[in-house]
Length: 450
Figure 1 (cartoon, rainbow, N blue to C red):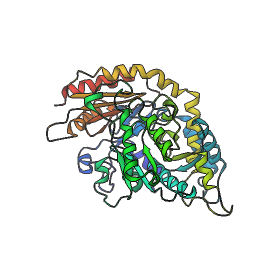
Figure 2 (figure 1 turned 90 degrees about the vertical axis):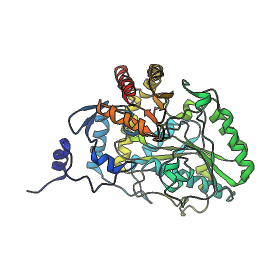
Figure 3 (figure 1 turned 90 degrees about the horizontal axis):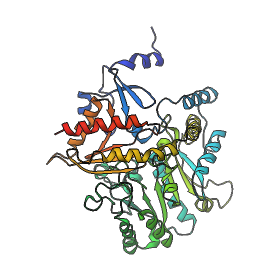
Figure 4 (figure 1 turned 180 degrees about the vertical axis):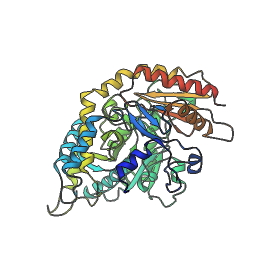
């Protein structure tokens, strides 16, 4: 009897595969995982279902990406309709209508003159694309000497060579020595001494933006192409920007002809209670990188949105010549565009960004209810994001948070850990009862994890 893909999907929906060896899992301790695998087989709304039939409350929106909740019929149906009509169209010297519609609707959501979108397939590709656009812009603008890129310590900008070069997470860089030259880093903004248990944006730390002035003095303003930061650093452990910090970065970049790139792969699409962080903080960056919530994670997709002047600087010379020698086979994939358009409809119709803003005070109170739990040394929150920093075990960093992660999963809650930080970022459809359960499970877990 022949086996179809559909029958394989159905067959594996309720059991562990016989062979786990063939797959090399990303960002995973593979040997540890395969000794005791945690497998998810279905999802709907706020919950996953595990291979053993348990309901798992999603406290992380997958990986910061399922902002509208799982299994949205509107998105599923849009992808199905597009797959039936046209599965793929080339994007080099060709196009399809959905690309233009999605770009128009996406740029309309962003402030100022951020009005041109370039599509990618992930946050990592978006970052590398943004860095290349910055370099190409300065060359087209008559300043080819601006080649230096400035990132930030503890920054996460994906896993491409550009992203890990400007990124500042040590473990993401250590194994890959041949990174981009001409890169430097700002200091990160996290300070337990000054900002522990802050609610929302901490008051201390805006002055750290002035480190950019020191780098300008060191390297020369005319050598720096761009500064890239996450408005709120997520994957490194939820680092909230100090009040006034991002504005100071914007001002310094303006004074020195440097492009400011906001990496909004995590903060985009309502995560902080606004469409994007640049809206929340009332700052117009020169370039914005996107992914994750763009399609509600139903189909991989990313994007880069640039200001009009950057786009127009490259639209010169003979019209028959390619202006930017860059792109991907799947840029603006028809299925991804269909998913993106449907996701934007869901966000608007369900008013999810406003809903996140309305829930943020209740979320904040729940986060800080953990202040007196064992091993908690800091709590951080903004919008519907939280970081719960735990005291590391002596000589065994990361193990306390990992043990908490495993125990939470056993108790029916999915959290994310990075270092010794538990990070939370639930779907924006979360209810107060879900929030109560999340922090109840985490509180009990922290009392039990040695």
